[in-house]
Figure 1 (cartoon, rainbow, N blue to C red):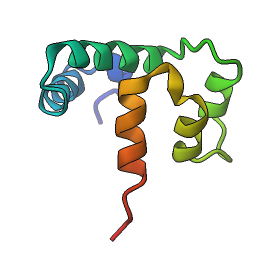
Figure 2 (figure 1 turned 135 degrees about the horizontal axis):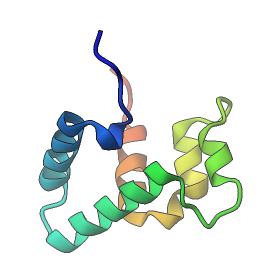
Figure 3 (figure 1 turned 180 degrees about the vertical axis):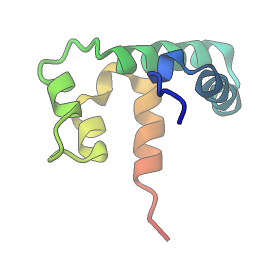
Length: 89
Protein backbone atom coordinates (compact mmCIF):
# COMPACT_ATOMS: atom_id res chain seq x y z
CA UNK A 1 0.00 0.00 0.00
CA UNK A 2 1.30 3.50 -0.78
CA UNK A 3 2.40 5.62 2.14
CA UNK A 4 -0.20 8.13 3.28
CA UNK A 5 0.69 11.79 3.33
CA UNK A 6 -1.03 14.71 5.01
CA UNK A 7 -3.75 16.35 2.90
CA UNK A 8 -1.69 19.47 2.22
CA UNK A 9 1.07 17.32 0.66
CA UNK A 10 -1.26 15.16 -1.45
CA UNK A 11 -1.13 16.69 -4.95
CA UNK A 12 -4.22 14.82 -6.20
CA UNK A 13 -6.27 15.91 -3.21
CA UNK A 14 -5.01 19.50 -3.59
CA UNK A 15 -6.04 19.53 -7.25
CA UNK A 16 -9.49 18.18 -6.40
CA UNK A 17 -9.93 20.71 -3.57
CA UNK A 18 -8.95 23.61 -5.83
CA UNK A 19 -11.35 22.38 -8.53
CA UNK A 20 -14.10 22.26 -5.91
CA UNK A 21 -13.23 25.79 -4.73
CA UNK A 22 -13.44 27.00 -8.33
CA UNK A 23 -16.92 25.49 -8.74
CA UNK A 24 -18.28 26.66 -5.39
CA UNK A 25 -16.83 30.16 -5.36
CA UNK A 26 -17.00 31.75 -8.80
CA UNK A 27 -16.11 35.19 -7.43
CA UNK A 28 -12.29 35.40 -7.22
CA UNK A 29 -12.32 37.44 -3.98
CA UNK A 30 -14.59 34.95 -2.20
CA UNK A 31 -12.57 32.00 -3.57
CA UNK A 32 -9.34 33.51 -2.21
CA UNK A 33 -11.02 34.11 1.13
CA UNK A 34 -12.27 30.49 1.22
CA UNK A 35 -8.77 29.19 0.44
CA UNK A 36 -7.27 31.32 3.23
CA UNK A 37 -9.97 30.12 5.62
CA UNK A 38 -9.30 26.49 4.64
CA UNK A 39 -5.61 26.97 5.37
CA UNK A 40 -6.46 28.48 8.75
CA UNK A 41 -8.75 25.52 9.47
CA UNK A 42 -6.15 22.97 8.37
CA UNK A 43 -3.34 24.59 10.37
CA UNK A 44 -5.53 25.14 13.43
CA UNK A 45 -4.71 28.85 13.72
CA UNK A 46 -7.75 30.02 15.67
CA UNK A 47 -8.03 33.07 17.89
CA UNK A 48 -11.04 31.65 19.74
CA UNK A 49 -9.87 29.76 22.80
CA UNK A 50 -10.65 26.07 22.71
CA UNK A 51 -11.43 25.86 18.97
CA UNK A 52 -8.53 23.53 18.14
CA UNK A 53 -9.18 21.22 21.09
CA UNK A 54 -12.92 21.16 20.36
CA UNK A 55 -12.22 20.21 16.73
CA UNK A 56 -10.52 17.05 17.99
CA UNK A 57 -13.23 16.31 20.58
CA UNK A 58 -15.22 13.20 19.65
CA UNK A 59 -18.20 14.44 21.69
CA UNK A 60 -18.72 17.60 19.60
CA UNK A 61 -20.52 17.16 16.30
CA UNK A 62 -19.20 18.94 13.21
CA UNK A 63 -22.36 21.08 13.14
CA UNK A 64 -21.86 22.12 16.77
CA UNK A 65 -18.19 22.94 16.11
CA UNK A 66 -19.06 25.17 13.15
CA UNK A 67 -21.88 26.80 15.11
CA UNK A 68 -19.51 27.51 18.02
CA UNK A 69 -16.26 28.43 16.28
CA UNK A 70 -17.04 29.06 12.62
CA UNK A 71 -17.35 32.82 12.95
CA UNK A 72 -13.61 33.16 12.24
CA UNK A 73 -14.21 31.65 8.80
CA UNK A 74 -17.42 33.22 7.46
CA UNK A 75 -17.22 31.81 3.92
CA UNK A 76 -16.55 28.22 5.00
CA UNK A 77 -18.95 28.61 7.94
CA UNK A 78 -21.84 29.39 5.60
CA UNK A 79 -20.98 26.41 3.38
CA UNK A 80 -20.45 24.01 6.31
CA UNK A 81 -23.74 24.91 8.01
CA UNK A 82 -25.59 24.56 4.70
CA UNK A 83 -24.06 21.12 4.04
CA UNK A 84 -24.38 19.86 7.61
CA UNK A 85 -28.04 20.99 7.80
CA UNK A 86 -29.12 18.86 4.86
CA UNK A 87 -31.31 15.92 5.82
CA UNK A 88 -29.91 12.47 5.17
CA UNK A 89 -31.90 10.43 2.68
